[in-house]
Image 1 (cartoon, rainbow over the protein chains, first blue to last red):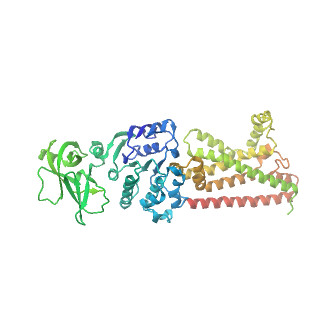
Image 2 (spheres, rainbow over the protein chains, first blue to last red):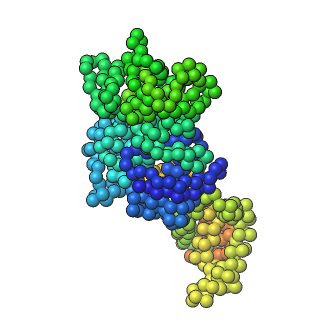
Image 3 (cartoon, one colour):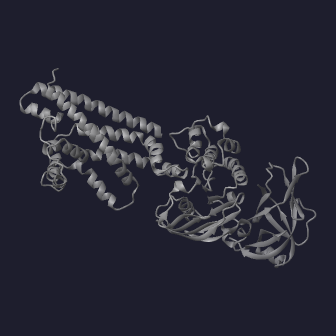
Length: 348
Length: 227
């Protein structure tokens, strides 16, 4: 558990956070640019000398009043924006900089393991200018991990990366979290990027905490609709019946998706705009994925003519963006059983 | 070209003064430049102005105040005498102190510039990777600001080499103690010994040229490393 009670005066806002964050899985800190996400991450790392208050990591005290534990004693791994590599060191020296400064008895991750986990072998002989953005990111990640940190802090790990580099780095982050069990705090201004990874989400606005909690539940909150309403569904098992289609088990119901690449993960991201609602199951439709759902309530959408229908599918929240006219036409009410058609799904 | 024993003595004294001043300056200027490059404190402007004073003040003014301060009746000089040491006017130690003050901006400016160019990120990263402050200085700051340190050292050395007014005011012309090359050239000229003055002057001219060439090549190489 990370307990935070911190104040930090900045030029454009005051950061004021009182909360506790979990130390398991991946916690994402989201918010618009300049809302204090990076400042919060830097304060937790110990890089904001003017930060006051209390930071407690499990049973260790990192900050009490103005007495701060130095950064190098916190045993954190940090990946800075744009994956900064030390320019006077080779790629290999960069990778091992922290490892060489970690006590032998504290080393839980070895270079061999990290090189294999992040597929770094081909990068080690290269010069820094030969590395792509995604490759630098992987190297910076490996360098931070090799200090065997108690907490991994990632500042906008996807900023400045193109779609392909992003797709390259995501599975690695997922794998690290699964295999090393190191808790991660990840800052992003793109909700899209982090729903694929995060277990827990924190929303900041103007230096204040708006809401925080488990990702799936939090996404249904009004506060997140500004980022484009979406839902995350966890599937239990997945099997592929042939080379082209993948079957995912969602409670008692099934979803079928075109086979892209499958890494064993069963997390689906569904945009609210890709979900349609009908009162009866559709028979003559091209949409493959049709699930039975229960209406829970309604929240307003960004456009006044639309609203977001909050649904439950097999106990999991799902949002659908529909026009107010459709809501009235179908006479949608809470506790009603409906059928949802999901047009597009992203699988992670 | 003929050099007298007095000339050799002055050359040796000058080299000793320049080397000692350079070492002391790097020790003093590094933390000062670091603070100036990083702080957002308002007192920065005052400190920066004080550091830059020797650039604009006539050396005689600086020498005059140092003489008052370090002499037998000055605050520092009298304190030293109370503690059983001698005061610093007209002594080698005195001109070392004077040289450190006089050349301070030449060490602080390039160091501050290179610390600013480096930015806080490399050190923050190194700290997050477990490097303590001393470790960070040697593994990050020193290699990344190598150019700044070379420029600061050579400029301090060269500027001390060309020092005249301050030494004349505070040190006078005591052979083996305060009579450095620039003073000796002055003495030779006063005594109408133009040949001797010429020999030493040519030597100084060549030395200054070499030192400045080192500075500019270091700056260029450093710029390439950063690019």
